[in-house]
Amino acid sequence: MSIHDSKARSSKQLIDALNVVRDSARLQLHLLSVEAKQRWQELESNLFDLQTKLEQGGDRIADSVTITVKDLTHSVHELFREAGALELTTPARKLMSATPRVCSPQDSLGSAARIMWETDCGAVPVVDAEGLLLGIVTDRDICMASYTRGQSPGVLSVESTMSRDVSAASPDDTLGHIARLMGEKQVRRVPITEHGRLVGIVALADIARHVRSSDGNSLPACVVLAHTLGRISAGRADVPTRAAAE
View 1 (cartoon, rainbow, N blue to C red):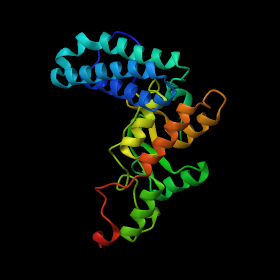
View 2: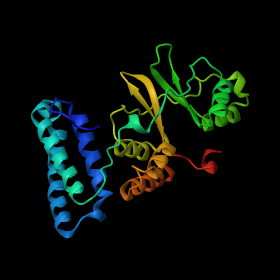
View 3: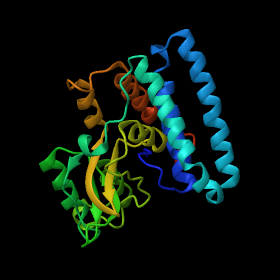
View 4: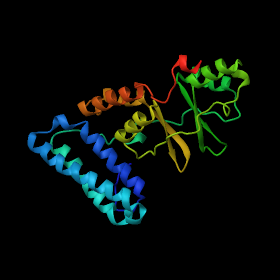
């Protein structure tokens, strides 16, 4: 999430904005001089103090600190801009694949697999008749469902297999925010929605293509890509080993 104006937002949105700017800055610290790093330490301390204040005060104080969040975020951006760093603020609308192929909960996993084959992708968003995002189904979901249930994808429904807990972003959310979301949730694709309706999807491959493009070939973006891939690929402590599951 980015703060573009002084409009009041919820405490959670403000905390998310502080986390995004802090994570982005940490990935670019190598670009700073000693003096600039000292200035960053001051700003980071202010970021932590403001986040603690929001966590304790919640929405009750969100209105009064919205402008402070905006000003502090701007100060961090200016610090790295002066150091010659490219901000990781490319919006999702410039990264996403617009109008991706979708399926409905009533479709079979075979239908979802056909979409994946035809579009050379590894996941298909699931929407209702109004285009509202309901979930997502991946190629791994299809394989595991078919194996564990002993049935072919053609007789299994998308609804019985899809992931319903989907972390989506908005078209105005930044590359830095989406990369952070991918790392936290350990996913390679983030659906983009407006008012709950699917308008696109950003995959890790889209970020990689952005890094290779003329306007995205920056060291900070490369570091973000590598960092995100590392977090996605890290093992999950809550996933049982094959031996333990048998």
